[in-house]
Image (cartoon, rainbow, N blue to C red; front, side, top):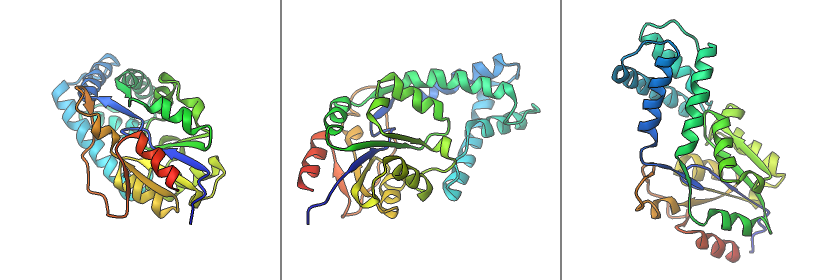
Length: 249
């Protein structure tokens, strides 16, 4: 039976955009400079080690609970471990992270063909975006950088909602924004748990994209480890694959 698809929604990172290979290392070094410049005397190597540990713990807790975390939490906790008395809501933490993420946006690159794909899809479908990202303004900054914002009827970022994929709350927010039934909404993402499993459990139609993997031969692309998809998961390796699937629906 032919499926009635009204809307198509996308993940952001490694689905529409990628981060250059040097992104996290350079961003962390920049963070060290910002922290030191804000008056927190640190040893850079020691700070980076402690910061990574706190970030890992915070993300693990967020994945287990489904509730989003934020960089201000693990940054302040890392500094406390280094004997600086500071809380997550300290104005200095906010200033540091604002400057940090302004620089972070510059590391993003648009996956080739993405703009053309969105231009074509918007003629027939409602488009949405749902991204796991702790600092929502940076996600909006990346969309603005590539002039993508106007393509989407709704944009949901976990840092705004307070929950992260695969929690059903964020998919519910997405559907509310699109105003389409889950069964008539496609969700496209690169993560088999957050995107594919999360969308499926919320009643959406998941499509797994490995497109970023297939352009990763270019120097400077940073990609998360690739899993193995269940046999019943639809995979696309290029945007033309998506159009073929939609046509078959």
